[in-house]
Amino acid sequence: MQDESPTSPSSDTDPASPPRREFKARGSFVVRCEACNLPRLNCLCPYRVRAESQTRVWLLTHPIEQYKPTNTGRLIRDVLPDTEVFTWYRTAPDERLLALLEDSRYAPFVVFPDDQEGYAERVVGMDRVIERQKTGRIPVFILLDGTWRQARRIFRRSPYLATLPVLPLVTDRQSRYRLRKAASSDHLCTAEVAAELLRQAGDTRAADVLDDYCDVFNDNYAASRRDAKPAEPTPAMRRLLAARGEEAEEVGEHITLSERDEQQAN
Ligand SMILES: [Zn+2]
Image 1 (cartoon, rainbow, N blue to C red):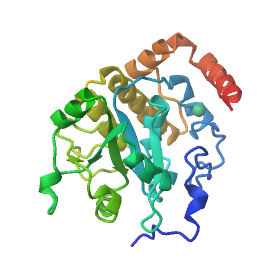
Image 2 (cartoon, rainbow, N blue to C red):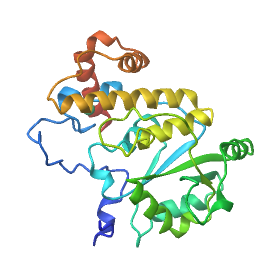
Image 3 (cartoon, rainbow, N blue to C red):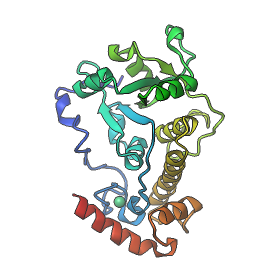
Image 4 (spheres, helix red, strand yellow):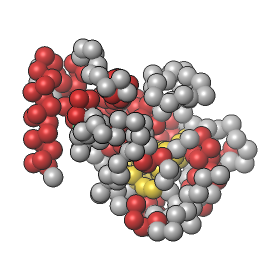
């Protein structure tokens, strides 16, 4: 059983300073981009495109999940800067999350399947999301970011989620995420879930950008395992580069530009 209650939970909970813990595994000698944490050769930064959305995403991330290099939750925040990321500790709920749940500007929905026992009366559909939006509130998708087992634990063991409407993701979409062995191709990664929800809620542009960004992450990460670059720019890469007003042929130059952007931003 994994222990999700470390002795000093406060050390890892500040979303303003994402963890920089080095991933000690094969390839740890590789020089990594400080911004995206991928090897320089596979830097994701040139493809980072921001998008606007009417709906928001808040991630409630299992502490074990947040350090995994294959975690896709961070991709959502790259595309949608308003995304909130909270680390879940059973015994120490995040105060800021609790405050935001009370904030009347937002209409939060906890995204969770409807096939478990005990909360049928809380299950709603996307029509409810659209409804809340029409009344002037900002719909928020709360995603439980972890393995299925971790997500179920977060859902069951967080009293502050127990009054929220439960929104199951209804989709025929198959996962394109290849970095971890999912139980089946029906199991979407966190960024794919977000993209699908955004799309269904009408945030098409944000969904498209996030899907492309997720694809590029997939390709770059997979290539990094072979210590290689993706063979050539994919359509998703080209679209994102075009969205940044750059030419796809100049990928090398983009990396330099991107690094300079990062330095200026920090
Ligand atoms: Zn980078």
